[in-house]
Image (cartoon, rainbow, N blue to C red):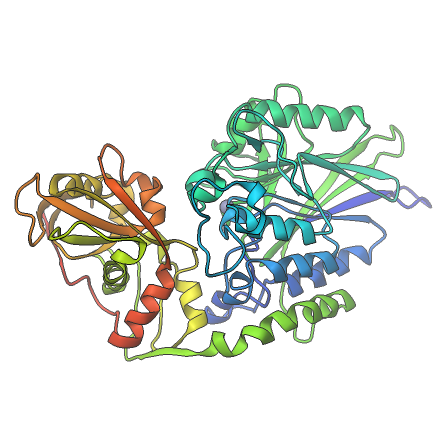
Length: 537
Ligand SMILES: [Zn+2]
């Protein structure tokens, strides 16, 4: 604490992660009866509080700014950039979901094959490049290169940056999760390499910042740790991507890791380095305070505190009001579309159920009905559709379901895709997912165009007993599998060890296919209709 008569000189680093397009408060907090919290306006109030102290203030976002509510996703992330420019964000890590939007325009899911960044708006990063150009802060990723090692050369992208403020030089190095190709739309990262010499690139950036006199040096990482997370600074954190990365840095460790990607509260030490992350959607904000030791003149960590960004209407601060004003036109522009009623449901639809759900089945039916959207399919071959439960994130209903609710239930930008395999190939795909331990908590997919009989053992694990596909009786009979493109590109290990050829991919998003179905059928509640699970003690 400050010595008598002399104000201590400190810098406060305000940070959050996984904002995911949240402008107003996070609805789940309202629905659970807790205080409304989160969103860029609530975060602005917290930033204003910290700036009102005597501390120098640096504002950092650990990535996944985009993909979430309708207001931001229809505008492909534009309102978040507008908000952050007013907020005075100093740097953001480049997260996996930054790549979700593909070419410019909500209607375009992926670019035409063969296009690269030279195609601009029409290229695989058209929307991202437009957002980067408009940002008044850099997006950081030191482990992102072109395949073959070339530099990225995008506007406002950099491996690292130095924020100079009130005599402090805060160095910030960005890191993007190695899972990125599997956790965004894969064609949108064509030609990019996140993995080669990732640790070496981070270490070199940290070393460079130190030689330039930066202190503290922060690793702003869109990645996290696994397992149970510590919640106090004196607690050691476990394994996971950040732990592996720090292990590769040798002596070039940062002074602080601001983590993200797991949407989780975290405070602890990974290999001795303080690490923090705060929930999601701007619900949580961290303040990491570094102060100059009056004796040694060295900069050292003084404290890390985390708090909930409670949403106030009107906002508490002038900054909050300014941010609210800049996002308001985006909200107003799509308000009518957002509030459009899709259907009125008598009962609520829950996606995550132990024995499968009619909700994931209904999404699979919608996928099956749009199976030819990406091109013609082989004639007289049965079509089976599969929907991964992890892609359905919120319940719907009861009563009116608005278009905005479909963005909460189906938040990802995935579209309908197909490939052709055999009945045995389909059985292998389903078994790939059924062998996961998580089946003891939720059934991993919905499906349409087939019937499944399974056995559950005493541990809750499942085995496939019988797969019935009308029109494909023999193991070698052909089956078209329609699915979210996420699965086609390797998500959930669904296609591991299976030959599935003649792929098609469409520009039909799952949520828009499902919108048509729900408007017609007006129901998605209850158990999965084509699934029987026999419990064997
Ligand atoms: Zn992420």
